[in-house]
Length: 322
Image 1 (cartoon, rainbow, N blue to C red):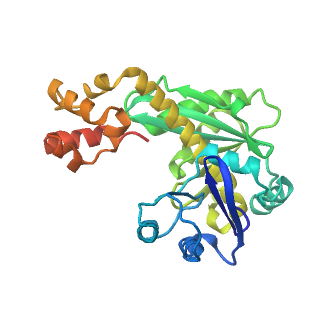
Image 2: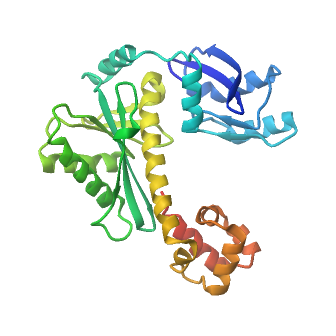
């Protein structure tokens, strides 16, 4: 969580059965594996699933160590499901700085006031099919799901993330012309995605619109005035921006998945070279869903009788799912 602090919460069956709050000196990001291993080395109960809102260095090593200690496989996820996070925040007094603290920190770093509204954008596609965009809204300190919007990309053929993003942003930014107070825009991506936002901003003449982008893994925030800010050095901003970015990604992917499910598994498999009627039946019988096929590695596909070249075609097809 925020301010170089870690909060352990044990949840069983949607009941909070344990909690511990730790203050940490220095950079949490560099110490996170050590913090977690130290916590469980003290004899604390090891759950089957551990969710973290921070990336965990040496995650696989930590997972193996915890699994050996528990004598059962332990799963570690570097994100907290929204349902669990909302449940915890509703039922426990987690020390999160209030909005006035965040506003002051934001002003100190960026030189302008924290907007009341931040809109997060992402694009999701599957090999250029069912390309969609998402817009999620953070408003007055929390996510406002009533204001979320989703977009089917209409003008772009094939895989072109930049063109798809420009279309979605153009359609959304047109609404900004009616707004008295512009939101801050946060795009899931790096410098390339930020550039697309600036192109649309200039085309619509929205001079006062501020646009940032946030790259995954490195958690580098790119700003429209050329700054590159490593958010792990600014934990009050890290949770704010990663929550919005990750929610935009989740919302886009869930909409893309919904459209794919409407299309049907067998119809999608028809689009993959080398997958005929017999192989289609094998894949359907083995995996049942599109997502399971997309996650299968080449070795698994070969074991069920799919030739390597066809297995590679399958992986290439689904690698477009973002």
